[in-house]
Length: 611
Image (cartoon, rainbow, N blue to C red; front, top):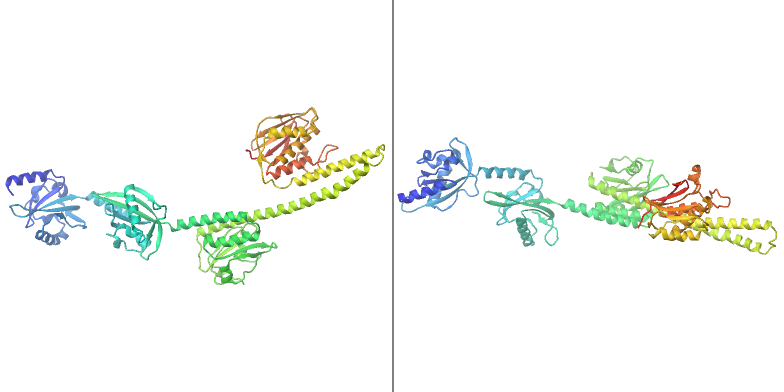
């Protein structure tokens, strides 16, 4: 190389940001720029004319001579030691990680090699840091080149998820992690990852789940937490793969539990509830050996629904007396779930077939749900939790069925009672009243007979009304209280009494029954407060009130006012306020008697829903 050209070339090297060495064919350093001081700790003149191996760690020098000779035999521009971690020896004997690029320099003079040396300590530290993090992450992590999608690194957790050795994945396209035959779709997902920079992916663009394919060909649903990472000139895409099979199973169980709950709430009898629970235990928990037992005679738990698998594996299931020490009896008595790792350890006379672990879930006072499995310690905490929710829902459904059956019995008795009142009592009264019209009306004693018969008619009608108002109100509508109240006021003989409405409001209720409430309360106010009484209807928090400015209610009798037959009037039947209470309770309301603002009687209704 001519001196002028050499000087120009060396000037360019001095302006470069990296350390640059010119090495002759014999391995001697012919030139070093000022940047070598930053990288190696030497001044340039200290290493010129020295063998380049002086800058190579002692342990690598012998191999380096061979590699140098090999390169000089076929010199090309390329990085030195591709895919190999390189280190240089500094003046103080320490080593520093480096990247080295080699370029042959020809021309008219002897062959020289230019070595561009870059200190990559920061990149090396960053890489070591992310490798430490990589191995500490509990999920499978795969790192791919963002440009071509090929895997450059993977942590040990990929072995658990895919069944592959992490090193075997290096160099493979990232799409090879996903189901065969669908890899084009996953190539698009990778591109989306790279464009997003950082995102969590649980579905493909069409809404389907993301799967990986294991070494055994199994498809596993995953969630991918993707982010980009730059190390030096490399742009990498980091994918954290989380196995979400357990999450998907919990979602399925919750959905099944919700659907079962709806079916339970629509079941018409105890046997239907029992069968639904037995079937749901299998569908939700995945265990086929289930038995639902109800308490019978207050002394034993008798099987009502037995799954086919349980009957096949264990035969007909016995009753369990509460007095005996059995897992089901113990769970029922304690009112808490009982989990037994191995039911065969129970020293009793009952044959449980091949059942080992057992889960016993009380359904309140109704009975126990038993679930068993042929494996020891088969159930986990999630099984107990889902099973307990199922048992609690079954208890609610059974409470509802029992309540409805009791209502049906009560309504049947009320209907029977109403029939007796309507026919067996009213008919003789009407006959007596008819004969009374045929006798001599001048006899004053007959007035007493007529009054007694009228009184009996009022009692019969009050009793009949009371019986008819006891059923639950099923359909309710918004009711304008001002309009309804004025209509009821006109139906009552009010004389000089007045009515006021403090508020406008619309409770949800049965219009005909609420009419009975107002008519009875208005009549009660006039009977006790006189024909000049003022009645006020208004709204209160969660309800409404009806009050008057009459003499008020005796404080010691307020709790007895709503009892059938209780009255302070000589001509009263005592049914008016009883009817009011029955109608309020049929709506799900509560009614109470207290003192009004002006000392009169005040009746408050709470638990009321408004339009």
